[in-house]
Image (cartoon, rainbow, N blue to C red; front, side, top):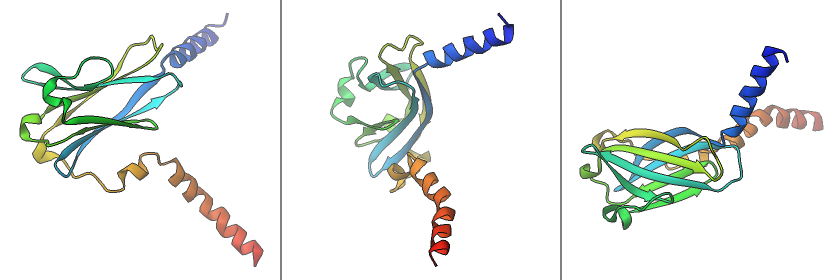
Length: 161
C-alpha cells in the first residue's frame, strides 16, 4: 500500500471516530443570571451528555450534569437548555462568589474518543451583557444563505422587468 494512501486512511478514520468537538465556550450576563454557551460540532445523531462545573479554591463543583450528580448549592439555581449544536447553562442570582473557571464537558453516546472539555474564566465585573439577538445568530447558516442569495434575487427582479 502506498504510504500516502495509508496516512490518508488513518486520518479519515480518526476524524470519523471523533463524534463531537467543542467549538466555542462563552459567558455573559442576562440580567442577574450568568449564561454560559457551549457551542459544538456534532458528527453523529447519538445522544449527547453534558456537564457544567466550576473550579474555585482548587476544587471542582458540579453545577448541572447528565454525567454526574450536581451539588446542592447549585441545584435550584441552574438549568440547561439545548438547541442545535448549543448547550446553554443558566445560573440564576449570579454573584461574585460564583466566579471561577467554568468548564463545559460533552460526551456523545458510543464515542470512544473520550469527553470534550473547554474552560472559561468568569469574573462578574468583566462579563458583558448578553446580546438580545444572540440566539438568532448562533446558527448563522440562514444569514449566510440570505446574503449569498441577494444578488440572485436582484437578478430575478431585473429579468422580470
